Image (cartoon, rainbow, N blue to C red; front, side, top):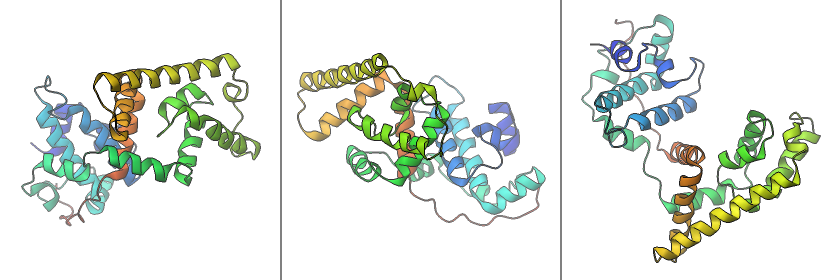
Length: 255
C-alpha cells in the first residue's frame, strides 16, 4: 500500500498537507513545525493507548520526507502523486531515530540560553506582534502563549505593542488599550500564585540550584497552562532542531 493510501487509512485523508493541518503554500519552517506537533501526538511513547500509533508515526515520517524534498514536493504539488521508489521513501530508515535527529531533546541549559538570546530580539518582537493581532489584544492569552514570558516582562512587552499601535503598524484593540486595572491585578495575582506554588514544590523536593528552580517553574506552568506550555516546548524544539541532512534526489514522474 502506498503512502497516500496509508494516509487515507490512518488519517482519513490522502492529502499530505491536510494530514499536517497546513496549506500547500506553507513554508518549510511551517511544515517542519506542523510535522513535529502532529507526530508528537501519535508518538508511540506518548500515545500507548493507540494501537496504530507506531504506524501513524512511521507514515508521518515518510510524509515529511516527501514534503521536505524539493523535487518530491514539486512532483506531488503538480501531479498529486508520490514516487514510492524514490530514495526518499525506499531507503531502509528508522523513523524514530530520524525524528530524534530532527528534534533533539531540550535541556534546561538550552532553555536558559534561548531565553537570553530571545528577550529583546527582533524575533521576540515579531512573535509578540503576531500574538497581539491573532488574539486581538487580549493580554491574558498573549501572556499564556508568549515564549519566555514572565510577569516582569509585561511592562516591556506592552510598551512594544503600544509603540506598534501608535506607529500604525497594528490595529488598536480595546481589549488591550482599555484593559481594566482589575484584570491586570488578577493576572499578576495568578503569576504570583504560580511562582509561590513552584517555590513550594521546589522546597518539598529538596531542590535548590537555579536549574532545579527553573525546572519546577516549568513543571508548574505545565500543570496550569497546558496548551501554552506545549506550544512553548514545541516552538523551542523546532528552533533548536538540527537541519536534516541534504535530501537525496528521487526519481520524477513515477506513479
